[in-house]
Image 1 (cartoon, one colour):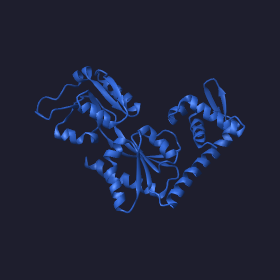
Image 2 (spheres, helix red, strand yellow):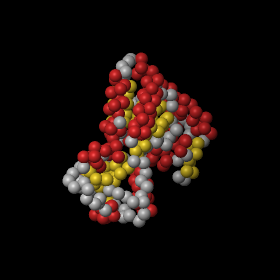
Image 3 (tube, helix red, strand yellow):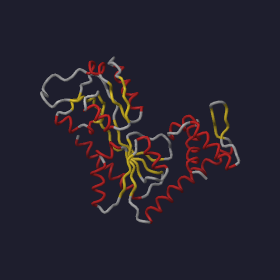
Image 4 (cartoon, helix red, strand yellow):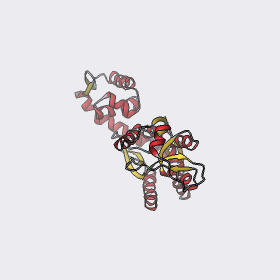
Length: 294
């Protein structure tokens, strides 16, 4: 039985919509439909009653759902047990910004305590699937996953700041005008779109011009475009702390604007391996101390 199709069935059942399941699984709606149809053909039953665009579990689907969830939990646990049994390292999936800024001290500490680890870097939107599929024991991303087949723990919150390139000279001159910059320059955005919907709403509330968005996948890429003088970027303060301190970037004041926050979340299977639980707890403690020191 295809575990990916099984996982899609569980997400669709919980979401009550193939369209919503496609968004949550980062698949096309056609792929979701095909996976469900293959699973139904294999089982010989219809799992959903379809009426137009709406779907709901059939009687067979209601009976199958708890079993499907149990199979997925057992598969994840079997993978974790096999990895631990062969002395494999803790497998970590992380978004690029988190891997660069937050994980080095955590991984150095884990190594000093005798732990072994491997790290794979994914876009934030792909981290949950790395954990669901068993490719990673723990994931770190900048948003909370919506499906209920993972644990998600909030670890850290960072301010967002509008930045523009600076030559490092005359730091005492008047700060740049946000309205003028937003009218003239594109704004480089990154990651999940929900953050940028909230940013636009914050600007709209104080009648600041909505900038021309230029979307890239990673914080660091948006940062390089902004610091190269090609536009503006709204970035986590941790990503530009050094540049702001040394004058190669300027924080542009946004009077009256309340920007959303950037977060760090740990994602674990519903029944995580002990090593993953311990690492998540250590990350929460270390990032908690970091937040109080800002």
